Length: 365
Image 1 (cartoon, rainbow, N blue to C red):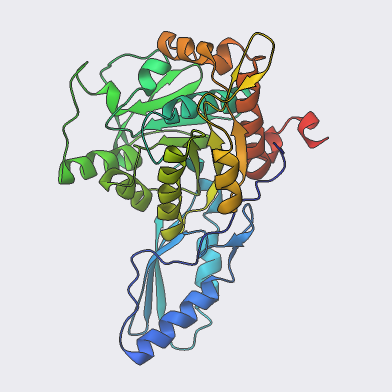
Image 2 (spheres, rainbow, N blue to C red; image 1 turned 30 degrees about the horizontal axis):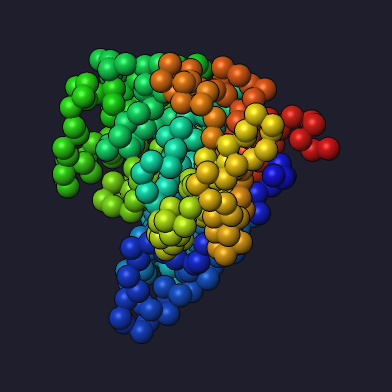
């Protein structure tokens, strides 16, 4: 796997939940605004802010423009650039931009899968550990309400999550494990009890987790999504400034088919798919030969078909299960194992795109 910038495939142009008005004048103005916004290039991913899904809820009402701008802490300057650009429209009296960000968080990434049981949370935990070991400040939001396993994988148990008063109101304080800041529904729920939340309650809790956690300064916030494409995933995608998603699959065709659906969901809302991680790719026998227990080629096939990079192929490793049960990720427990090195390579590829200062010199050679 190459450690240079991720060659992710750009998402289709979309302005999420932005109905184009039927009035011909308003329709023409809407098109003019969209075309101008496409001239604003996000310097890290080198694509326009419309294609990246950063502009949502665009509306043109009479001589006024309204939009939401979803950005990381290092992208706030884009607001001024947009204001200046749209002010060139002769009919525009004022542009109202609602900034949607997570204070202090530079890059928000989602870890997702089309189906359960493919090792999505294991991938999220070990990738967070690899990024942290590489020098990044990392937070991990466990939003998998159906199986909040992240606390156990990081050695945390149910805890009284504290809230503090800030200038922006009350905020939850995340816990810290192995240098990673963690917030999870699993820290709030009673042990061994199902989280039977529906509709409005689910939406409210997930929204609070996105907007009411005091993360401090982070290079990365990883969000471990529930599997599938339901209400929880849509809520998180709509409410958070996710700048890209990593999809986790296993090699067999059943898993690949589900991931394909998941990928199209993200592209539909304009969020770039940064790449695919194929988990449980193979098992090494005692002679070092790779045995494809769950088949082979699924990840490569999906990557080629959907023009999305295959970031890494994670082998079946009994130690990764042991580390998860013991609360110490394998990436920390045995940093030189093949599995750990795979996560380190994925972390290096992310750093090459989002935090180049954290990429080891050897990765550039």
